[in-house]
Image 1 (tube, rainbow, N blue to C red):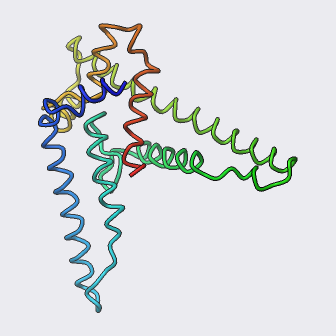
Image 2: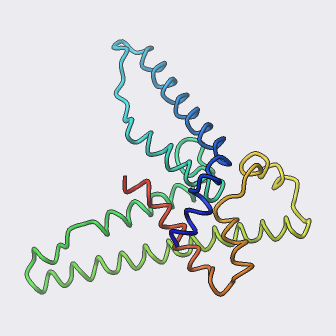
Image 3: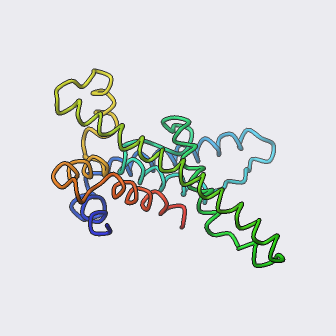
Length: 204
């Protein structure tokens, strides 16, 4: 799985194809900081506290997401509300997975109930996450089929030229591999790989 991620996304051959994505996200961050500075200059103090860590996280997250699925998933210009909900979902999954085991600090009956509640929450989150990831895979599969069949609509052509027309995204590469080796590159494999890369900037 790591070999596929490196060869299709992080190799020295592939990274230059996404240089425009990195440039656009850096420019967006610079414009955001300049706008915040201009707004603070209009105030009496002339200063405003900036959460730079959050903004840098957003930039890194959007770079990875655009390289993988061709969409911005964080910030003011994110593609849609569904993308935002997915990011919140991953954050919640990481917080639950990294939380202390409350059952260790409670008597046996109460500890068992607390553990059961956490398991139910994780099961619900994993179910929603899997459905979301499958929707992403199906969206790109349909788009790819339309492109191959020559039935791509005009608005889709415009979207591709604006977002990912100059380079193949990670999920598009994975779907191409799936067509060649369906028994190896299953939907479950693709979803696991995407989720691992999605979660990377959140662990930093």
